[in-house]
Length: 415
Ligand code: JFZ
Image 1: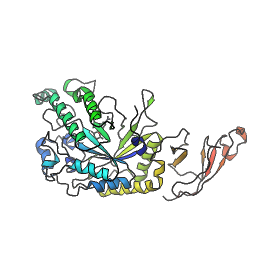
Image 2: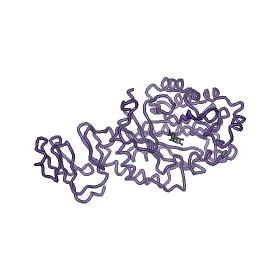
Image 3: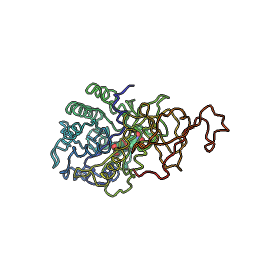
Image 4: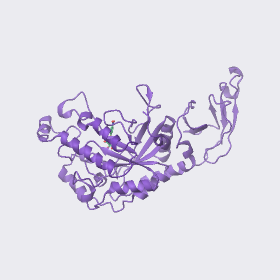
């Protein structure tokens, strides 16, 4: 299916996981992981007052990092809503901050010229009709106990709530470019209460139709347990351009800075800037996007580590974004430890390790009009072995005919 071109041109977006879990500051699944009761979790609702919330600043940080779209959690699995929903009291309006945070986010992101996306959780650990299963915070209870807890719960009513909230989000906030639903988890090896939830529970066909009716240009992900517009590998890089049933598909890898999506104060396993850049390049070389996550703090700003990381990526992007934006894979075969991205007739060679003065590029002899380093436009000299040369006469360390050999500075330029 053809999707709006902006998505595969933009290549790089910011994911934002933000909600009550920013206060415990130890992963967005904290309610589940620590079996926190509604009553205990309520303390975060009562103390949610992000006084430093400034979505223009978020959007400027994203822009400086070279990101072109932003996706905010309107509601995560804990059920807390960041907008003025008329269908529940469990919203930011009723916390000390008392604001429609989605409204301010959308306006700020648009004002900075970025595309707007929503993440919306299908799972809801707070709604009284959401049938409790193995992923619920009470997942350790025996099945009989879960059955008892589920008495009176009615997924049909939850479905109406889910669809009603999506309708609010897709009618009250102007054009929404992207919707990331999350997630389905049917396990056919288990039954009854442990069997998870999928397209019947969510009413996925109707929900997708509603989504497209309200926002005809919107891009929808693949986690409704029915096909969407793209696939969303999570925290892993595919080894090649992704396919479904043998056909190429649009894909986007969502990635964390430190393994947690929500703000995780004591987690210092932060990916270095050069790794994140390589992940982005790797994705584009395989025709994919990267959605890189930031978990803002309970005060509503980005922590120092996130900011420094974004600045670092931005420093690289300021000189290399031409190889990312509007770029995609190349049909040429890249040598070991390198990636190609291509934009029109410009071929970009990304060197993940710096070679010993030379790099040999198969099949490029006769194809290149000019070569330069991207960061400073300085010329790169090269030699070519005519493809018609007899293999044993090629010289240049035994490279095969058709090889183009670049002569690089011996020491990697510091960029
Ligand atoms: C989900 C959420 O549970 C998580 O908190 C975060 O929001 C992330 C972006 O999405 O996590 C998932 C969802 C699906 C899979 C793995 C983690 N999956 O299909 O493998």
